[in-house]
Length: 261
Image 1 (spheres, rainbow, N blue to C red):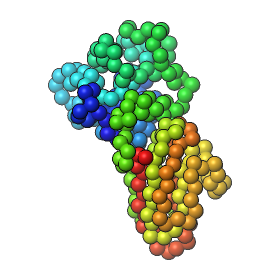
Image 2 (cartoon, rainbow, N blue to C red):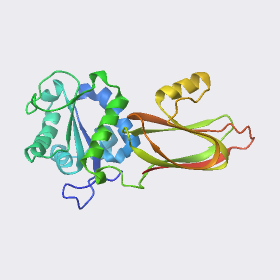
Image 3 (tube, one colour):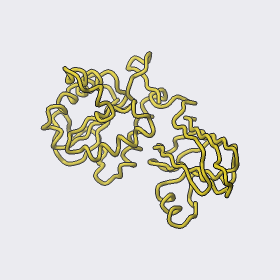
Image 4 (cartoon, one colour):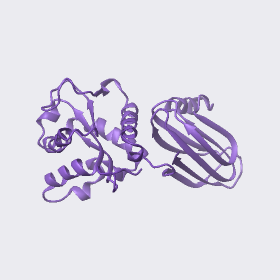
């Protein structure tokens, strides 16, 4: 997805920046993976995605510049450990300067009741202790879209592509995170008729156990050339399935593309 600069002229490097203590890494890693599926790994500021780049002297100054100038939406994990960590303090310093400038490009997620210096009871946050990782990622995507249309994917921009040769009885699985109401355009080209579906994780589990694709966001049987606009009815992770039920000896070549509508 493309992002915009603070002056609206040049692209920002990252759509989302994640600021968190190591104690929250397990949750953040899962959320970062979902965001990378939707945005592209290079557009998510998460340390494990950029290890080679971050192996450098003066990393403190380098990171502060990234959080301050190269991120469309900074997401801060508020918790007791955040207030105690030196690296969080460096990132928080850059983010607090954005708050001082009355920037709205900051989102708070809370994982415990710990105080963070500079964050107050009047500040809004999302408590993700009772939310799934998919729900947390979808809320981040929703907030990203609110900033301005150009802050998220541009219309027509490629979000996901997949393809190859699919043997009989096999399925291809891709994932995308969508905000509620988000609209995408799907195109599928195949050398022979395949089944195609976009479904929730719950519907996917049901299909795996019963073989029945019910409750899908979209379901197309026996299609070789598909082009359809789809709007998400719920926020979160969506599974994209291409299924070969042709009973043909030779695999079926296919190409799938999903674009921002």
